[in-house]
Structure formats: structure tokens, C-alpha cells
Image (cartoon, rainbow, N blue to C red; front, top):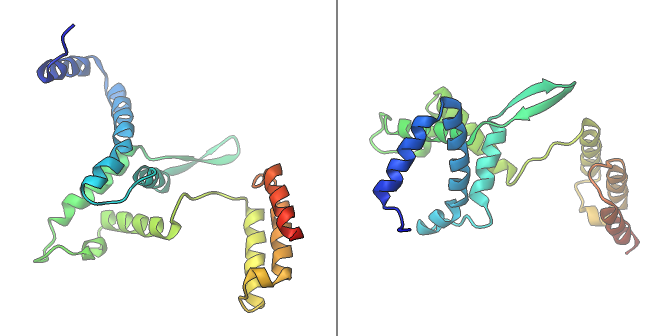
Length: 196
């Protein structure tokens, strides 16, 4: 069987689109965008950007969570990620809005034009830069432990944790009190380091 021409493929897609309802089209778009996001490192290389190891995909995932909405379910709080199409919509609208600037030249001041959209994008990009990687959620108890260690470190004059056994003991105690954070192998590594 001969390979389909670009025109024939376009006709097939047009026919398929006629059979889908709005919800199905939305789901198809999300699936296609997910595949598209996987190609970003290759496209980035064409423009001299380093995005290997899925960096761009991770950042899009981060924005999906950052702009997501929380909701209550069975007594706990869960996160509904913003669809990838929503993330791209916000970024695209912001990029296109910058062209409406009254400035003679485009600058990064567009992030601070006071609009709700600019604020949403600017704060997300700033938070992403600060996070420098995936965010994790920890329990309030674990957070309190870490804050106590931070205070102790500050009281010790911000000395290197390697030279302060008091701080290291606090960290070991905190690690032992967070069973969801460590595996048996991690406990063994911690114990081996302690014995050195």
C-alpha cells in the first residue's frame, strides 16, 4: 500500500475532527501537546538552547502544578494541574500582549506592566527560577523540624553543618521522624555516614 500524501493525511484528520465532540477534541489536543512537549529539547538545540534531559518538559509540568487549583477530596487537599493547553495559552497571550506595549523597544519591563496576565506570568517565572527544580510537598511536622534545624544553624553562627555535630544530630533526628522521606537503603547510608 502506497504511503499517504500530505493532502490525504490532512483530509483524514479533517474527517476525524468532524466525528469528535468538544470534550474529545480537548482530550486529543492535550495528548498531542504532551507529545509535542517531548520534542522541545530538539527544537531548543536548533536555537542554541540547552534543554536536554527533559528540562523544558519539566518546566511545563512545573507551571501546570503552579497554576493548578487545589480542591478538597475525602478530607485531604489535592491539586488539579492546569492542562498543558492552558499553560501554553497563558504564555502565548502574554507574549502576544507584549507587542501592544507603548514602549519604543521591547524590554523585560513588559513583565511589570501591572496587568493581571503579566503579574501571573512574572510571578510564576520568578517562582520557577527560585525553585530550580521540581517542588515537593512535605508534611507540616517535617516543615517544623526543618525550621528548627534552620534556627539552630543560625544560632550556631551559620557554621558549616559538617563541623557542627549538634546540627547533624538534629538532621538525623528529623530524617528519622519522616518515614515517608526515607527508604531502608537511605537509612543505611545515613547510618554509614554517621559512623565515618
